[in-house]
Length: 285
Image 1 (cartoon, helix red, strand yellow):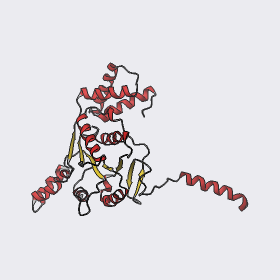
Image 2: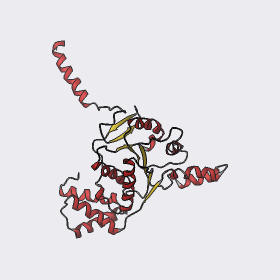
Image 3: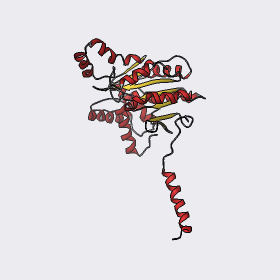
Image 4: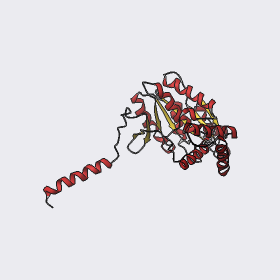
């Protein structure tokens, strides 16, 4: 094959490879989406075109928490004072679902959509670099960290304290921080007890760690569901997605499903609904 005939083949290969390559977005261009995930490698904000979330109206059993977080977020979006929020409690009770649902609910009637940026717990030390980018954008932003906690010999909490406290430069006015955790104080109990037993001044050392959660002005507790609320969640999903099942059968199967998992929670209810929808050949979206 001559060079002349090879050229079109090589061009087609190059075009195919370029199409397969992920497009990298500028960290300063936050107009391409309303949700991003922070990537420390290259300090890029990767746009998320479709956030994995449920509708705000489908969140049952956490109405008080939902109303409080929605009000706090709306205050922030409107430029009024608002608090950093810590959503703590049992796994699968709707903490992260609520943050994402509130973000969507706020944006339903806004000309200036609120930005949602997720940062992974292990990337907390890179918060100053991320905040510099968000500060320059001027877009009002909910900075979100899911499943935030710290273990023994983990000093990364100091980076978070510096951000929540503001430091010299201060947290940008256009950024608020929301975190979810299974721990109310973000620290393992044995970590706090170890500090108390080994520190020269135990009370001061323990206070430094426990006070991290005090930097969140808003605490919202989440707990395991009672059976009635669990049923209400399942029934709400079934109605919303038009599943073909009677209330009696739904409750019987939902109860059995929860017993096999040893828990009743929003996550268990959603997994049950996914199973029912799958058996009926219906898509959830």
